[in-house]
Length: 226
Image 1: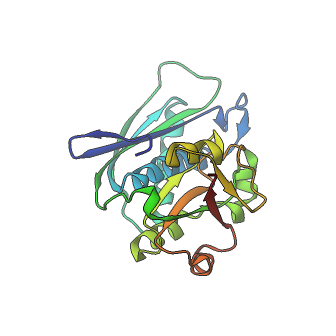
Image 2 (image 1 turned 45 degrees about the horizontal axis):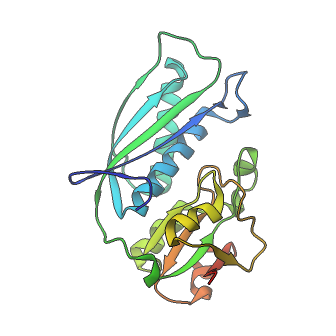
């Protein structure tokens, strides 16, 4: 369990982005399509963490009518890159009040399709590096690749995924394991991972080489601190 909400058979996940976009007062300049794409990325990873796949998407657009099409383009691009059809999509835009900064939220509703394994039955790794702001776009080679994660889940190479957000790896590991963890690599455990630029992945074996063949070099084993 992470941040999802279960309503009967539905799994609900969400992520939002504020002051990131193309408005002059935004704190971080990024294409509106890209902003929505990364918000959808986090909501999708939250679905996978719950063992579910999205069947519908709601977009909450606080930026203005002109941004709606761009936000949809970004979300569509995410699913196109994954080779998956876009789920049903609806939402609303703020058109009465002009805002000085951008704001968008993406909510996904899904159905559970696989069992979520207990963390103590798997071997855990960090995949990707913590990035935030401009670094998310500038250091794409260090960012966890969703298509590779989806492929690893389908192939059974990994059995669980846990996205890392703004509070950093150490915080998420405490939520997952209930105790501190150690990583031998030079990874900042406290740094923000922004839109889940890195994730914790649970594998059924200790074969790190197989993981590196699939994911690349940004795979770092985790050990619990006794």
